Structures are given as C-alpha cells and as structure tokens.
Length: 397
Image 1: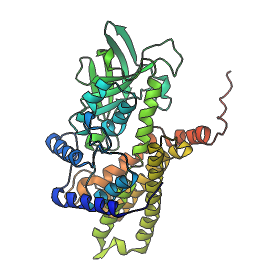
Image 2: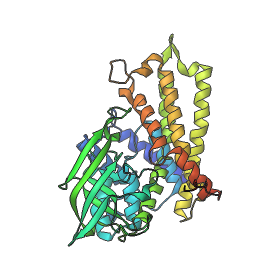
Image 3: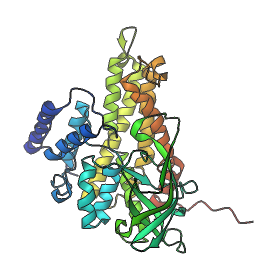
C-alpha cells in the first residue's frame, strides 16, 4: 500500500472540493426510496464527475476510471467533511453490482448496472427464510422448471426494502435432491411479478424508511431462466460473493459517522456549554475516533487486496463483527449527548436531525444480529480464519 501524496493527488483533492463547493445542495440530501428525481439527479451527477461508480466501465453506466486507492480515500475524506453522501449504500449498488461484474452475463451487466447505480432501480435481497437464517444453505424456497421459466414457491423474511423495491436478487433451490450447499440458484426477479405478496414487519426500529423489514410470499411466481446469474445450481458460490461485498460495505464510512457525531457534540449544550467541553464525553468520542480510524485503514488494506486480486484472509472476516459494534457504540454516545431529548423518537418538535440518531441506534443494533449474528461471525473467524476446530455437535440419541 503506497500512501505517498504527490502534487497529482493534491490537485485531485482540490478538484473534489471545487465540485462540492459548486454542487453541494443547500439542504439535507435524502436518498430514500420516495425521492426518485432528487436521487437520480444527484447520483447521475456524481457518476458524470467520477465520484460514484468511478471504476465501473462506461459501457455498464459507470465513469470508467482505473482503480486508485488514494483517490478513493481523498473522495471519502472530502465528502465526509462536507457532510454529503458519496453515493447510496443500499443493496443494489453495494452488493448486486459487484456480483454482476464478477458473475453476470454481458446482457445482465448492460441492462442492470447503470440504472442501479443511478438509483433508477431499487433492489432487495431474498436470502433469509423463517427456518434458514444463520444456516442460509438450508433454504427451501423452490424453483421448478416450466418451459423457459422457473416457477417459484416459498417464503423469505427480513427482506429489507421489499415493500418499495422494483427488483430482487433471490436464492432458490432448483435441484431439491442435491446436497445442502448445491442445487441453489441465484435469480433476478421483478417485484411486480404476479404471485408476490409483501407484508411489512414492525420492528423496534419503527418506521425508518428504506431500512424497513418485510416477509415475502411467493405463489407460482414465474421468472425467465435467462434471469439466472452465473450457472444454475451454483448460486451458493455467487451468494457468497454478494455476502463478501455486503460485509465490506459495513466498513465503508465509520469515519463519516464519527464526524457527524462530533458535530452533534459541538452543537449540543448543557448550561450553555458545548458537550465537546465535557472531558467525560470527549474521552468517549476520542476512543471511538481511534476505532473509526482503525476501521478506515483496515478498509484501505481490504481495498489494496481487492486491487491486487488477493484474498484478505482473516482480515476480511472481522469487518462485520467490528464495525457493527462500532456503529452501535457511536449511536449510543449520540443518544447520551442529547440527554433527555435522546429518548424522543416519533418526530417531536424537539427532535434532533429528524430522529436520525434514534433510528440509527436501533438499526445498528439490528445489524449486530442481521446479516450473520455476532456469534456466527466469531465462529467464522475462529474456524475459517484462525483454523480452530469446529465446535462438536451433540451426539444423536
């Protein structure tokens, strides 16, 4: 990893600052599902200037630049300082797009990547089932052949954004007689297909927009065989590519969240004195900054491995475990900083930042469970990363 900054990178940093000075919106930037025109305009502008989809080839709707570690770091730093989102951290761009770049057909890449990166198409992820959460490979949602189509029957749960997504990347069992990790296929499914029923799930997070959870029922849902990503029956391998990128995104912006927390501490006061002046709160903030910077540089290490086509090994396995806990701890400090106002949740006139920190606290707590619980992550690190023996299964009676 070469972190030497020369004149070229200084010029690039100034270019980013000039862009933000000219184009930064005056109000908050919302990238929720309901803000279609604003979302598409902002993301398209970022792609045009190379700050989003930077290394995605132009023929697939990206900017087409060569990968550069320091350019990525500079963009993140400047957008974080400005408090402006550099893209959209949802399932389509962060999880599906890199999966299609690795496993998709040319037609699939040209059809789906550009609209996904511009926010014109929103995606949900059909993985977990009522009896197949941490043990994802035991999924039972079936897809049987009928001419040029598959016919899907089954149920998915904890499907984020399914109530307003246009598309779903879903795992289904196409060969029921195959072994557990085999016979699974990875499909792209329009959510307006007849036979799909979405039922929102009420959680402790309440209504926080695009982070909604749902259960989805499939009754004789037809999808063309051409919508299979990769080869039929190899969905488990492709699903793990998606999961790898899902876990990597959890390392994406701890520094940006910390900066937002620091701004909150500067603005919140007790007796006319900023909370930043409190040695107790400031010490907690500094401890979190050390962890955020650690995750930032760990992300640079991961990006370097990716650019060199090297496996990060155990380094890639710790990301979700560490960053999910860090996110929750930052939210906890924000709630404490707001004092009695931190308990407000349902859009009171005294609410800070439209209830961002209250929602973020509940959502980050959920992420410690979702996407593979902390306990499962520790097992993965121990067994796959450190080579420790598997926990023995109880003897059969």
